[in-house]
Length: 237
Image 1 (cartoon, rainbow, N blue to C red):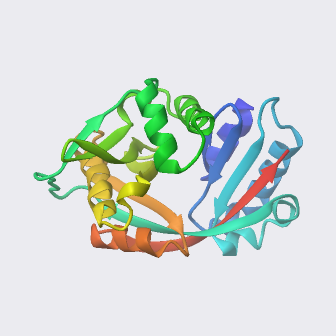
Image 2 (cartoon, helix red, strand yellow):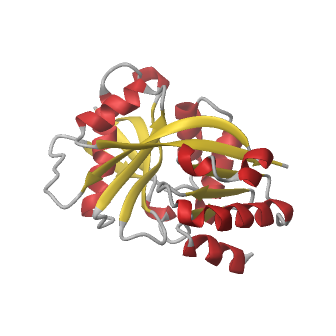
């Protein structure tokens, strides 16, 4: 598996791996490597390690059109748009407050389950996978936006592995009690601030579904520039 992952990296495919999910991503067309990428994905799907439940892959449509084997084995599940922003210019959040919570505390798990509108078990599983995917950063990622001493949302900033200090947000969400209040823009700004000033990111890359207009507007309002779109595929055992 390690050799296969090194091959993915050599052709420009980024990856994150937890105990149950493999995430693959390439945002450039890279048609010159299409045949090799197709072979690598086919090899991965044919030789999945025990415990892996899903493989997710994102790439531009023009590249997917050249991945004949991948198209037959993986199901298209979504279309997302990328947004980019340089973090080399000053960025302040003087009027915004946040806390960093431990991923292992019960309050963190219960709060995340409420924000995600999911079960406590699924929220704990999300945090467990995050520990596996980003072990060196996980203790500094759980960022909670505080308004009037009350937690209103959570964002997970991190540096994408094997990049030139590219900042990402693994997940971001406002608590249902505060939806529609305009706090999402501030939460995203806190994530950007932490990426620049604490994680030392040089740039930010954000992804959201094509139909998620509120999140698209948030990123635009926080100085992000819309980039290319990608197709999301999934293979489930």
